[in-house]
Every structure is written in structure tokens, then in C-alpha cells.
Amino acid sequence: MLWRLIPTRVEFWCGAVDRRHTWIVYFREGENWSHTVTDGEADGASTA
Image 1 (cartoon, rainbow, N blue to C red):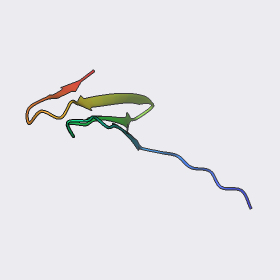
Image 2 (tube, rainbow, N blue to C red):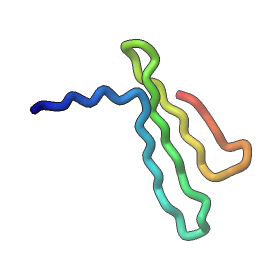
Image 3 (cartoon, rainbow, N blue to C red):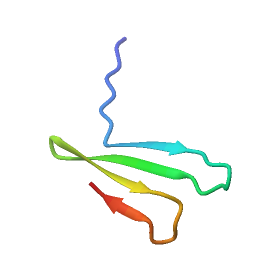
Image 4 (cartoon, helix red, strand yellow):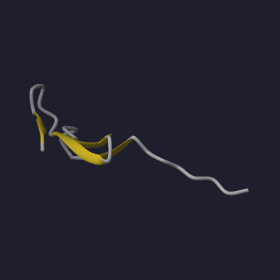
């Protein structure tokens, strides 16, 4: 039996000594991928 995974969202966490981790989320929008980066600040989200 073969399996095929088709992700719609992938998350990466980068730990930091001060516990303010960087969180990168890639998400699928149709055929394209976008991402959001949060740097541990309360309002530190940015989308590219």
C-alpha cells in the first residue's frame, strides 16, 4: 500500500534561550505557498 501526503500547512519552530521562539508557518493557497513569521513578540507577526 502506498500513501500520498498533501500538506496544507507546515510549521517550524526555532528555539531561543530567552524562550521567545521564532515560529514559521507555511500554508497553501491554491497552487501557491505563503508563509508567516512570528518572532516571539506579541505583535511580531509578518507575512511574506
